[in-house]
Length: 177
Image (tube, rainbow, N blue to C red; front, side):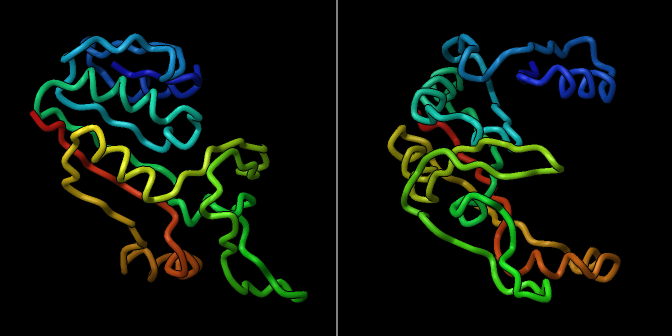
């Protein structure tokens, strides 16, 4: 089952898949009725930082996972979302100085411009992501802060800037029995 608020994303997903077994639902993750002990795995790519009530959503996900079920998700890294604008600080000549990290421990809404569109995202700390999983009996199996691969850096020199701060956070957690 694929769930998304964006009709465009659902349409694109359907175009990229051929299985008649996949059901696509146009709704917010918060509005889905999560059946108990129903899923072996829940995957989420770059969605959770758009959800305000993380605790409620996570309770639903844990409930819908079967025993030993797995949650794998990616979010924008808390260092990336903390300040809000998601823009490098530059000097008067436009040279990149640093990535701003401000209000890190102040969780809440942030506005950023992405591909010319203003996006509203919910910033959480790394502690919130990890502790909320542990508090629900989830076993954290992997945490990854991916960085550009060496071959990317050779093909796209501008990717070197991506080594200066983490942009993404990936987590894999298993439901305890």
